[in-house]
Image (tube, rainbow, N blue to C red; front, top):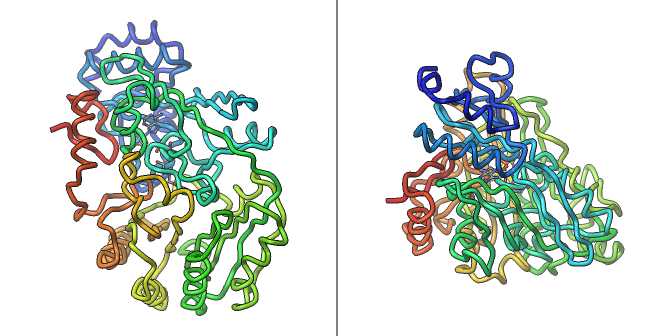
Amino acid sequence: MAVVEKLPLADLRRRHRGPVIGPDDGMAFDAARTTFNGMLDRRPALVTRPLDVNDVVASVSFAAGADLAVAVRGGGHGVAGHCVGDGSLVVDLRLMREVVVDPQARTATCGGGALWEDLDPPCQRHGLATPGGTFGDTGVAGLTLGGGIGHLMGPHGLTLDNLVATKVVTADGAVVHASEEENADLFWALRGGGGNFGVVVEFTFRLHPVGLLLGGLLMYRLEDAHEVFSTFRELTAEAADELVCFAQIFRSAITGDSGTAVSVAYFGDVDEGRSAIRPLTDGIAPIGDGVRAMYYPELQEIFGRMPFGLRNYWSGRFLRDLSDGVIDLTAATFEDPETMGGVLVECLHGAVRRVPQEATAFAGRDASHNATFISTWTDPAEDERRIAATRAYSAALAPWSIGEGYVNYASEMPSEAPDTERMQRLRRIKREYDPENRFRFNHNIAPQ
Ligand SMILES: Cc1cc2nc3c(=O)[nH]c(=O)nc-3n(C[C@H](O)[C@H](O)[C@H](O)COP(=O)(O)OP(=O)(O)OC[C@H]3O[C@@H](n4cnc5c(N)ncnc54)[C@H](O)[C@@H]3O)c2cc1C
């Protein structure tokens, strides 16, 4: 690749102790540019795998000197595949995954490439946890910077509500600390503004005691979708913070399985939890009941894993409420046997809703639910059809939407998103920290 040949690559290789991988490196290069979404085939100019913050500074400084855009890879799980950009320098943080837990202070600090399965177990050894995602192999970084919707959201808020400090390498190669006390504007922007502001090399989270809980999946027939979603709505409208449920309907293009499901997480007495979910177990008859007493690491496995390499397109909206219209639309969409994929509906209640809208840059604070069409398939010939169906469902949610989508689940962001004060403030902070838009492989906030 011509651009890189002209650059003083040898200098970077001397300075950077982690691997520096280029297009001439064959299989290593192809492996390094692979991300979760198999539909994307992007060719960066270079991939660096820093060992520490000095390597990250070397990578970002090199990119600035060579006028390369920087893409940042945390866990590589972003469905939009922004962690690898055509012609970019990819800073791939997979070798920076250390976790340090301070059980007395109830904090955990992890490297910018840590996955949830790196962070959760050492915290749980002390009976502690911070709200994370629901899949162990998702990156802590991308999930936190966009929000963080998970089982602990009711009692303790989003992941980003539990972020207390960060260390960031900015576009000019400076190492900056951001928290409520230091660079508070940057800290605000990092909590919801995605990877727009630099490479976050370290995250420190607040931890909470999380012991034995009631958790698992309830499975129902596809035909029961209407009743399941209505019961889920009524139950969660009145639910205590301790009860967090997500509902989904699915028909898999890969396995052919279909059904409706509700996940249960009750962070309290197990018998009280069973009483709390009675409408879901006695009111409607589940065809599968995996709900039992368990600890948090097991709860983090109830959805299994989604393998890398499948073709993916995801789209959705934050909703004002889970109205009959949304339930009708969702059930009707899956009455069509041609519909493949799943719709996940997450209820945002409890601690999430008590954080003021302006306290962080998260866009969905006023939403009661988040609805997302998750489309996954294998045959490239189906791309157009699957993408169109996903977009159509998501666009049809617009009348019930607060006008925003969840960055972390978006292949593309909804075009009708309003130009709010939040967006204006994000642009100002982007101008201050990244005026040349060096970090542009993300749901981008243009500095101008
Ligand atoms: C199977 C699956 C399950 C999921 N479950 C949940 C869930 O339960 N809850 C939820 O809220 N979300 C969930 N998500 C969405 C997830 O939050 C996003 O995909 C998120 O972007 C993943 O983070 P990552 O670090 O793995 O991604 P990456 O693809 O590595 O990065 C995503 C974005 O973040 C930027 N970025 C990554 N690391 C850094 C860093 N250290 N510094 C600066 N920028 C960085 C990248 O440049 C890119 O723009 C899930 C996604 C998948 C595929």
